[in-house]
Amino acid sequence: MKRAVVAVVGLFMAVSASAASVSLPAVANPAADLVVVFDTLQAEKAMNADLWKKIQADKKRAQQRSSDKSPFKTEGRDIAGTINVTFISFSPFRFIADGLLYVSGGKGTSMREDATTLVDMAKDSGFEVTKSGDKKTPVYSFDMKAISDDDGDEEMPVCGGVLTVIDDSQARFTFRWGIGSEEALKLEQPAANAVATNLPPPLAAALAAAPLSSSALGLVGNAERLAELPLDGNEEQKDLKSFLVQLKTFTLVFRAEGVDLRIWANLVFKNDESAAARRDEFAHDCEQFRATMAAQGGSMLRTITTSGEGRAITVDASVDIGEAWTFVSRFENAGSGRKKKSLRK
Image 1 (tube, one colour):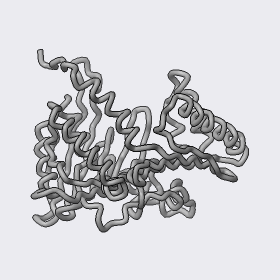
Image 2 (tube, rainbow, N blue to C red):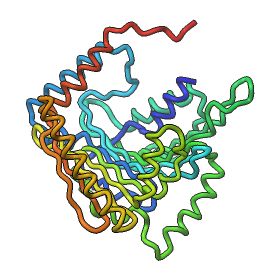
Image 3 (cartoon, rainbow, N blue to C red):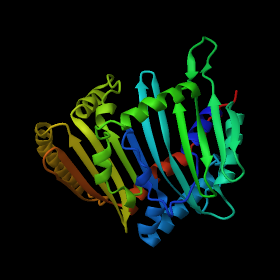
């Protein structure tokens, strides 16, 4: 079961391709419910060189200490991509993801090798894998039937996807969770019809306004759709849901700038009244957070401001990357000495 989940994650992220020449936001789908854009090359290029080297050296030492070794060759490689996620239902949880992935750097590595590694992992985990296309552009289809326990309860739903190797550095993919291959084909036509209407796609305006092309990580979401999540548990979940139902879209962007990590968030509310009611609250909370951090002597948070008009609220913050990395490393080092319990019986 664990190996199956690992293969699913590997298939979804698909490990591959080169951020060099393609404008990633150009492949973002404004009709999706969530768009994720990432590019490790942005951080490498924009971060202070000495700070980048220190972080990479720390990561390398951590990898050498770890017993979990990746089957993919990652040393010296930069990964970038755009992932579009469309939620079919939340109960049961079902979604379709698609996008482009890129890899650059590394020695003697390529997307084709990554695909072969992924296929071997998938087969070992129980996926049925078929190959089509040609030698230059191979296409791999992955399918797994639902897995149930001895009592007949479903442990993992039907899932699968398609990975198309475009060249040595890039690949196109689709991935489906809780959806069979035949149902996926039936879902394509309604989606095409929805795009053909005169209504603007839900994320069109948010994607146009988001600075994704210069970001290390960006998320743009359809809050109206995500508000349908079954968040009915604890008070925190209920508060989150009550907030989501007020929003139309949200955007969160992370970008390296020298020794700083710039965090930019934009929230678009359904109406001016909701935005106005939240604007003063956001400004007060951000100032209180900044004052608390300063009083505790912390230098991680450099600046945090709020702005916006009409239905939009923008939060702009700057974090010291070195301080943040030191903070995160404390937790990693604290857990590195703990002896792992074996899962074997």
